[in-house]
Amino acid sequence: MSEHDNPSQTADTTDTRPDTPLVWDHLRTVRRQLRVADGLLFGTDFDGTLSPIEEDPEAPEPTAENLRSLRTLRDHPQVRPAVISGRGLADLRERVGIEGVDYVGNHGLELGIDGRRETHPDAAVAEPKIEEICNELGRRLADIEGTVVENKGVTATIHYRMVDREEVETVREHVFDAVAERGDDEVEIHDGKESLELRPAADWDKGSAIAQLQEHVDGWQPLYIGDDTTDEAAFEAITPNGITVHVGDRETVADYRVRSPAEAEVFVRWLVTDGLTLLEREPAA
Ligand SMILES: [Mg+2]
Image (cartoon, protein in one colour):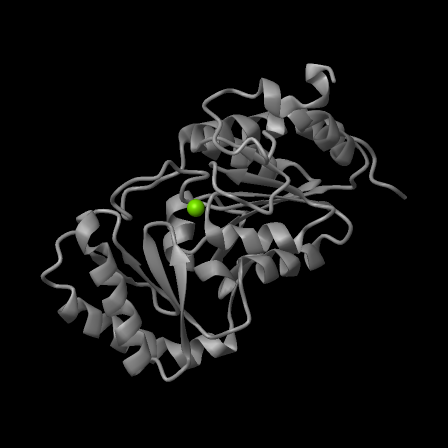
């Protein structure tokens, strides 16, 4: 067998997950998909994808390069860009700050499509429960340094990235206890990155969000890039036809990956420079 038959043998030795190939080794396939597409639905996560991961959840903003890329994608008539995040819709929109992009907040519970805002009906029911749980956790976690309880309205995130490693399990136990006591089965807990997410027990995730966006651009090539466990639902929703790119070295259902937010930025720039030229043709009659 030549080394060409098994790219993992030649992979960078710092790779811990050579089983999900780097997108760089499959650009020919991506090019082929773009060349036959009428347009591109470009879905992206925010934290850890458009912005570097920061300890302080209030800090992240998109890199200047990613903002330039997003604007170029927005201005292309055959591209529909959407930013899909666990953040609240208003927070997300303000952080990215570009008009003419679709924003989906709270993992799909809040959609801002064509500038209109929609909220999932189940979210309205869970909202007061989530507020009650956040207030309770504010009291219980007051003595554990580094915990951040972020009430985003229809969802909440309890961050423990800055918490002493020995106390992480205690934080998590408090969250599970508070939800069991006050959630009335209307609030679910999801694992996030160094965080637990509280969400309405609604059948809605980043996957259903991107599926909804697809209805607006029938037949266009979907692409999704993200680093979170919650992004897996979006990858699944557009498999097998979508172009799916995981950021990082975790196990993933995505077809490809890049190693870091810095590499994600390079991939998005590649899309803007090389990828878009492949789309530039008359749409099929
Ligand atoms: Mg993320």
